[in-house]
Image 1 (cartoon, rainbow, N blue to C red):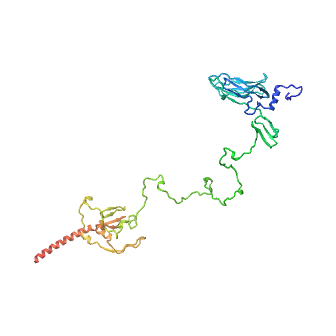
Image 2: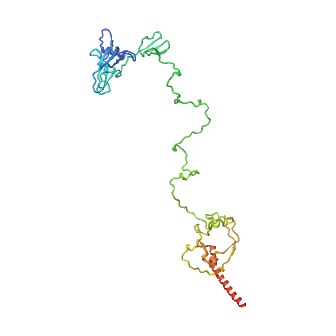
Image 3: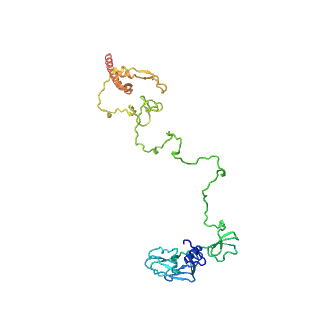
Length: 419
């Protein structure tokens, strides 16, 4: 038959049936409040023993009641520590619940496992016992309780009718005060209690607000406009951006430029064929201060040449700078053919009014008599070396000196004859 019902008159009921029934009324555990002394296991250092106080317990629907303290022997220690277990052992075959010490495994810190079956042996742990290597007694600190306690029923009462000696943790509803209360071992205490802020301990000095939201309409004193806060945008999220960007006007300090060359070749450039004031070589036109800077003071003054590339050089004449020196014949009659002229300079665009009434020679006319006095530019006559005109004048002066000397000699002879 698949269905069994009991207990009824004239119906056989087994202990297994009663055990299953009683288990629904009360769970397995010690009949005492939390921390109570019922079936409490302890040691007091008197040899290899532990003690279990009197008490009542229900083990899988079966009851055990002890009226005196029981002394249990702990097996002798060896060279390796172990952990034993004190249990209440239910053995339906023997019709008994007994106190038993289960010996642990040497060298292991794990107590022996509990055997808990539904209809055969069932073990209920009371405490574990740490057995040190080579010890001769069990100390109080070696015993750790592991009892579980029977549950308390929830009751209902008034202040005058509530239980007078309940177990610790008994819970009930007091109709006189309309509150839930429990027995703490000394007095009835409300589940919810009024708390004064000043009596709270370990409260924080400040409280970070929890995540929450506000309706826009509920916010007061909000500005009418909002300046954008500092933020950034991903380049890909920007729309309508130009394909190229002209660099804005800016500058860089020389030290901030990287990978710059150590030397710089001059770029292609040119200079005007004629050096005038304001050009690259402005001093070629003469002294920087021709009207106010007279030759005076200390130091040496030099005649200079200006080379075709703009370089200034001293006009040296010492024999130490010369070699292959030889006479140079100059025809004095050619000097007499030179034609001094007065002329006006042709205007040059952007250079102001040209000079007028300048005195000089025409280079092309001089070239016919003294080509070595001429300067050429790009294969054409450009100017003449006025500084060398004195050289061309030397044979003229020499010839005149000879003629004067000869005339003076003739005059002296004539005067001697007349006298």
